[in-house]
Image 1 (cartoon, rainbow, N blue to C red):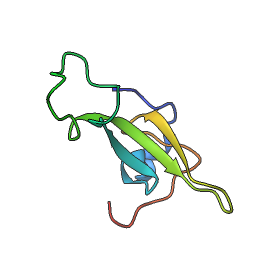
Image 2: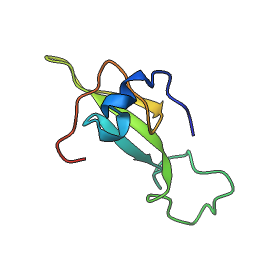
Image 3: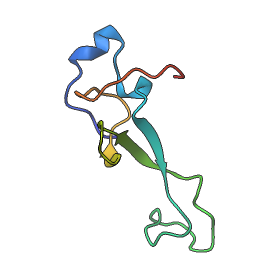
Image 4: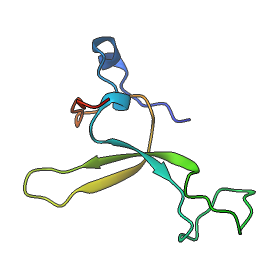
Length: 83
């Protein structure tokens, strides 16, 4: 698992794991990219791949930033009401 660079905000409870822009990323059976050592016939749609930060700035199309870490903090932090 990757380590995020800025952990100073953790003491305030601000972490990627409770940010509304932070989503779990999964493999897809329709994609060429599959987990290593995985049976090519097996469905991988429920296999965890990593984390994605999906950010939408005002007036712009949402952007997905892949290969994110599970815990950390960045300038786009926005507390989720559901997490």
